[in-house]
Length: 119
Image (cartoon, rainbow, N blue to C red):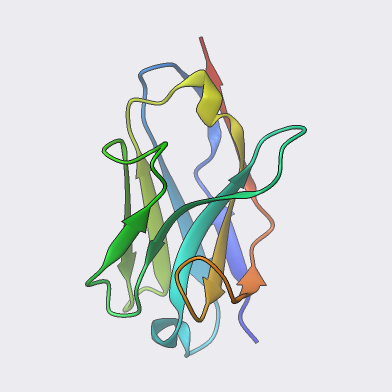
């Protein structure tokens, strides 16, 4: 069992930055691919970014490529999402997840953190 707790969300103006963090419980953090997803009001949850177990490979949705960076620190059981050049359409609840592959098979989810970007 893995428990995930996100933090770092908030209200920011367009063009600003936020850094989300997700801390995992347990000793198996490094065995999971870690991902970030988001869900805007009235929309389905969508993939944002993922990082492989060692942190050596990262993957991004086209909508955020070049603006967001995912990283992980296995010594701290933490995955990060650095979000720059934020846009109002980035407004959503952001979730971190632990899983077995890049875009699917996520087994554990956090409770989410709200990101609101004002225009």
